Length: 335
Image (cartoon, rainbow, N blue to C red; front, side):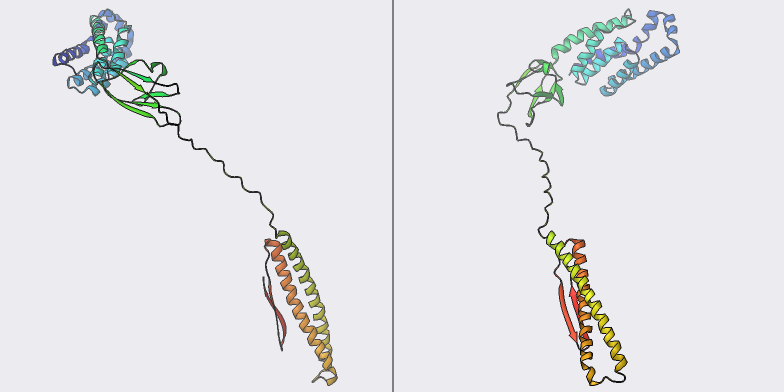
């Protein structure tokens, strides 16, 4: 990127930078340095040390380390010699746009030691090198056709709208251009800029319609609860079952009491056996006892089914079976 003679000149300037921080004290007098106090003296000493280390890294061609050290030194003491070395190191790193900015800032730098010969030499060198660098800077012009709103991005950074359609200084090398439009895929271009190149890239927006934006669908409203058609019949059947169960239970109680009274009378008469004339009473007792059993069974089933139907709201189909034997009668059911 630079010739051997130029490298030697740069190194000589870097070596000079080690000493030029000592000139302000000489030019301004020892009293000026004493007026700065111990903190000011310490700051200048630290800056001289960092500048010396930066010069050594520059000599080794470790430009990244050299730039870091020169920037640290410049943060302590913004001397023209240090700013000059920052700019030269940026040139070696290929960061020409930043280097041009450092040269420009040096030319407008107001130093309290402007009479220092080393500082004056640094400013003169910066002016010469700045003009030479501007001639080497590649320029890129990006033009957009059409009037659709779009933004231009270069290497991941948005280009301000006033800079679209005019020359923009860039570092030499490869650059990525993106034109971004709302709801469209970006248009990407790659360009390689050589030293001193003047390039122009014209980008025509696509004519294809933008993809349909996904419309956020609102969740379908929950349907309003619909009363079940069988809800009312279920309640009605439940109450009917409860009523029937209660009625059957009462019948069971009544017939049961009558049967018990009959049994009590028969037990008093039939001891040890019943006369033939009591056969009708015995049959009557047995009939009422059977009716009582059946009524109790039906009552229990009706009460259970009706209560379950009312509490659960679900109709059930009960299954009822009446069983009878020589020992009596009973009811079996499920619901």
